[in-house]
Length: 355
Image 1 (cartoon, rainbow, N blue to C red):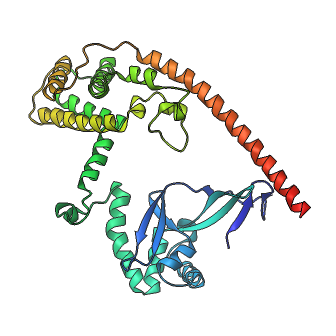
Image 2: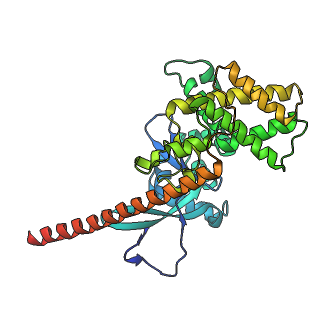
Image 3: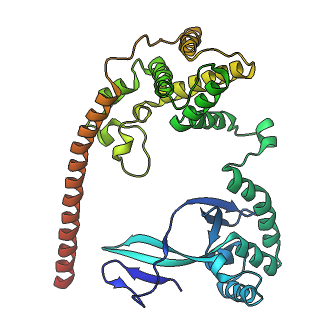
């Protein structure tokens, strides 16, 4: 049975017990071949984890049977409990209380060992899936069904896959890394330690942003960072809440059509640059700016001819100032919401006593 920790009343059981790790990571959904069961495997620490109850669903048996199998595995010293079992802290809201549960979960090695001992068709299916699809995902971060993508039948998701790849490739960190790789291989005067390299990257980035929006990165931020709008005018951000680090990234303010255009043109530009590098056409860094302009002109895009009307430092100052105002308003609204929750709880208690 799961141990329950109540945030308001204190931890149940031994107050000196260790604190479990907070539940984090992503989920991988495994669907059995008969389609009758779906199991959500949590990914963290480079592997996947399941509870005993989830293993019972997966292998079509009882939690009691899973408990006995795990005990036998540990007694046979096939695996150690310390290496394969871990407690994760799950926090959820139940009524007016924040309840914390310590969930005991087991890593992939133990799940597979249980699957061998269950001796069922489900165990064979899962081991086959884990040794192919799951292994590739854990190593590479993705899994593709090449044969299905090459032979589209019914719903065709190839265009969606391309759009997602473009979005990943156009992400700021990956774009910067690829530009650095290409220019270090093809530019005769490239020096990654020189400030000119950073300036050059920002110049290329601004030219691509200007081509799809008519504004530089700094101009986008100052024009669209708006305290009066929901989420400060951002169209995308990390996590559940807008944070300070989100508001000084120009791409976070782009509309869907602009993002699609930016992703597409960035991918084409990287292909263009990689092609030059592959052909060993070595040129100076300054010449790359001209090559970028010619690339944009060929695709009939507007070409940025200067540094823009707003500096990057000014954009950061403005976005930080506006975020401070936005965050203060958000905290005020959250506090008012807490007060309303308390009043509603008191009202419910009064009504209950009256009955």
